[in-house]
Amino acid sequence: MRKHQFGRQPTKIIWFQVAGLDQEQLAMLRFGFPTSAEKTTLESSVCYGQAWSFNLYHLRPSSHQSMLAQMTGKKDVAGTCEDWNLKPLWSYLGANSYKSGILEIDARKDESLLAAKACGEKGASYLGDSILWAMRAENPLGAEGYLPAVAQEFRAGKIYWDKTCNTQGCGTALRASLASIYRQFSKNSSRHLLLIRDFSLKHALERQNFVAAREALRELDKAAEAFYQLAGERDDTLILVTGAGAVDVDFPAEGKDWQNFDLKGAGALPRRGELMSPVFAQGARAENFCGMYEEAQIFERLLSGPKQQGLELKIINPFN
Image (cartoon, rainbow, N blue to C red; front, side):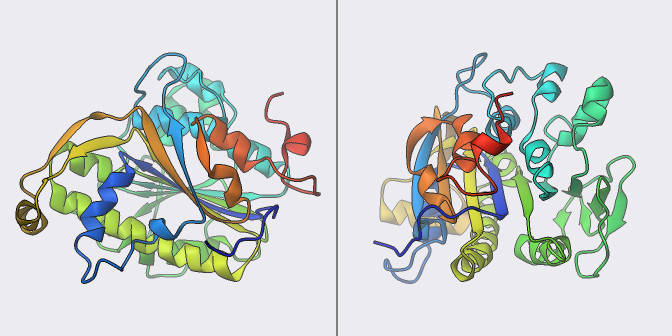
């Protein structure tokens, strides 16, 4: 029902990995719209899929472990230092002249990719030349501060910390912060990967703070909207939104109860993690993400397409 050009190679990849995201949670936004005809950005995706979350060690891996499986294409993520031996997506893309950047939002120390630094030489080199931005309360060791509203150059292999962040949150909305980062990051770079690892929704659900959870979803939807528009203007751009460790929420069953939930965040309860997580895709190669598959296969689907010079498995071959 939507116009889409098949078989396009993505040279610009924006990938949101959202801890705790489940497709039914979009009701927190959808049921608050003025009319029933209004939809969320993610509902306008060209392709929707469901990814099994289990791996070789766990039926319900942590969100962080799921994210690693998605971006390495491997199911043997154990939650130990051995995980950093699994080659990440940017290692393959770097060999094909792709620039890589990673934005982490509200990641705890054990959820951050910076945890790799405590795991020897392999872990210390895990990020490679990727730029990492951290939106969290504390300044990561060795990070350089930045202000999203101020233009500055971001150097390869460096870590940056949003100075507007504190224990109460960050002073810049996600959409505005991403726009500022992406503007500088994508300058003079025709091929790039921007990976957004967002834990804010999961942490809000853990606290049973549904007001904060709805705000995290709203920020995600607004940020995705800006990039969906970009994908509509360019046929070489892929926008991917994947859940990781999806959380099932027992929502109110009646409209009058939902009104109270909408106003106060009361009357709902997060339950145990789901066995599957949602995948939303827009733009180049989005057609690869329809259907049901294991989350480790997201990696393969991102790199698989009709034979063309550039990003495809036969050239990059992640299974070596």
